[in-house]
Image (cartoon, rainbow, N blue to C red; front, top):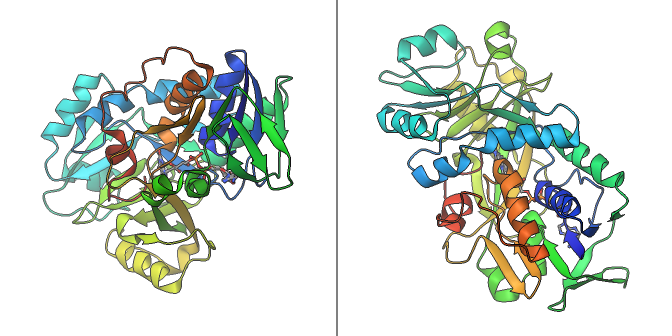
Length: 374
Ligand SMILES: Cc1cc2nc3c(=O)[nH]c(=O)nc-3n(C[C@H](O)[C@H](O)[C@H](O)COP(=O)(O)OP(=O)(O)OC[C@H]3O[C@@H](n4cnc5c(N)ncnc54)[C@H](O)[C@@H]3O)c2cc1C
């Protein structure tokens, strides 16, 4: 079989790997480089965690992701999955502990006193506790993409087309390129991330919402030891919507919050407006002890599409053999290994393997929620 995959972000790259492993020939088309530095996936790091608070089905579906990423790392080569641990702060953690215990992933409860002792860089509020997932962690996302691109580049069944922009996906499983060429295949998978709307039927594209979120890069001088051992931290702030990514393999700390996520009409630049930078600086001044504004060394923007109505399927069938992962959402990186398997099975006409995601109203839960990206 010949499959055309559109998009060189994490979903497109891992889908291409899955298709090749199943014996298919793959044309991977990317409008920029492979991988693309403009892709939402191409960033410092992404959190891989099991606990999704208030969402038991999504948490259960996420329980196998650590092993999935270890396997991806082994297969592609490279060192990009770091088990930093993931800490989720909350006042009431009983249900979270029970949920995680049920999934079989290692979990530990930390009291407010434990938190202050172990993580002096965090400003712990009265009544706050936390759930620590010691085996969870962070993928160095850009490194993972580079490893996948290297694997594909070295495979005789793969043809890479970059920089080549797809202008149209037809119902007969072909794609038209901006230079006038047409690639025909048995199946097409569209994994164009936040650009997907341009390649989807108009009504479907119009049902998706484009989000833009600001993140700060932070290189603190205080508490160097505590920062070097820091897990990813979620649930910061009285509304629990702020998060930080730890310094992994020399990267700066990343700071963000759902309050820095907004709906936008178009995917434009990645320059952070001063108001959004100031917003996050003010928020983290109250969330971190000894916060140093001068240690904010940069700011960046990420885009993603959501299906806020949650009425469409997660994997959209556009025609016979034509599939799209349309609403990439703000939490999909971690699920990329299973989403790629699911897309490859559909593209190749194989019986879909179980992913753990089948019973979930995923467009809403995975991509359409209003909690911002993590
Ligand atoms: C700030 C932020 C933090 C996040 N944190 C996390 C996290 O901690 N954990 C997590 O699991 N998820 C997280 N996410 C979500 C995650 O990053 C995305 O869901 C995921 O990276 C989307 O991958 P993708 O491959 O679908 O899209 P992308 O990575 O954007 O890739 C799409 C690719 O398609 C290409 N393309 C588009 N149109 C065309 C065309 N017409 N022709 C050819 N090529 C085309 C693009 O150039 C791009 O390379 C976060 C997102 C943001 C914004």
